Length: 459
Ligand SMILES: Nc1nc2c(ncn2[C@@H]2O[C@H](COP(=O)(O)OP(=O)(O)OP(=O)(O)O)[C@@H](O)[C@H]2O)c(=O)[nH]1
Ligand SMILES: [Mg+2]
Image 1 (tube, rainbow, N blue to C red):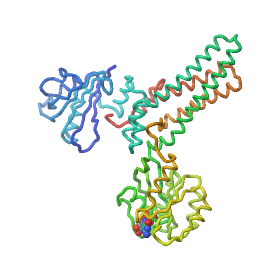
Image 2: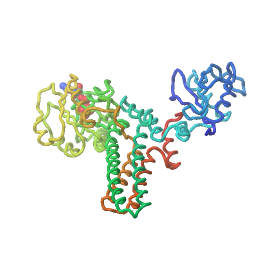
Image 3: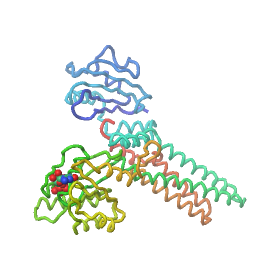
Image 4: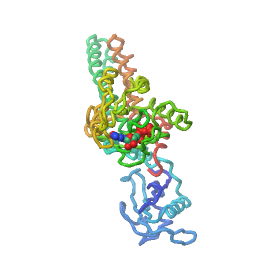
């Protein structure tokens, strides 16, 4: 189905060699033709061709821009509607003018994500694929983009569909039971079949959910905070990771006053790395606020890199902070190994037997590889298998899968207690529906609107 024509700039705002104005909808070609002057009208060119010409303001006759116009007719297009992509060569100002002209001559400004929403509404992609598109645009490492790409290709969809098929098989058996209640052995056979199959589905959902924490890290980055007392080398560590002198490093304790955030790639894991002000009691008003922010960042962190100085003993202040985070994931970094050792690593090990400890000398670039391996071990048991697992990374999917797991567990529990099958059926249907929502079946219009509005404009 072709809807009213929408238009937007589909390339990022800013300077670039080209920028594209994209039109999609029933009048896409016609609207483009009112503005386009080339060898002939776009309405007469073959589909999926790119055509040289000019965009001319029909009211003034002024030539606005030299363009290449790509014409793609439905249904083999991104939205399954007619699409015209006008490749402009000028700066943002001219591109904006071309966009304005399309709006003036019949197109409507596209909402964020509306092109992808149409692809979904016209059945080209399912919801998990559409969400994959969004993740793909935002992904921060190669691994993250691989996961998103798989989702875009429909990997999660295939997986979820096979689970739904299993549930349908169970439901079919339950129907037989309901239709022929007079045979006792049917009831028994149904219950044992139901239990066996439902447990398989439950295991699979659990597996998906287990992947979710890793998927989420790949998608959003692992929020990692570097903390410790002043002057231990926290900012030096951040700079080392980003290979840049972004954070100020001096030998003055209390150099960092504010939070500094950077994305880095550690063995394929995206880290959202936060450098913080060294924690200590201070009367300096600015530093005090900084220290307060460090403490806040600690609470929210998924990973804490606690840095100490090898040249100083462990202090009560260190112990107080480490105690407060002992139920979080912490790696202790004993830095400045190049200096004389005054830090008692064994004492630390006795106090916190489960905390991994890594020695570094950031100034000499040693030990950081070891630290990177530890991070990978802690969250991915060493390596990321983005190519052969189905990762669930999206909060909406995770929520639905958790509900689906509860529903199927209820069904199993009821079956074990010999509850009549027509009652168990309700939970099975619920599981089936919840899984359907992951791939966008039976989802309400409101949810769809909300989802696609998270896309960037022009996608
Ligand atoms: N000897 C030695 N010095 C280091 C090492 N790493 C960092 N430093 C030095 O230690 C000093 C403090 O480093 P920073 O990175 O600013 O320390 P910080 O923990 O961010 O300090 P605050 O921001 O004040 O909390 C600087 O002079 C660094 O050059 C190391 O491995 N060995
Ligand atoms: Mg610092």
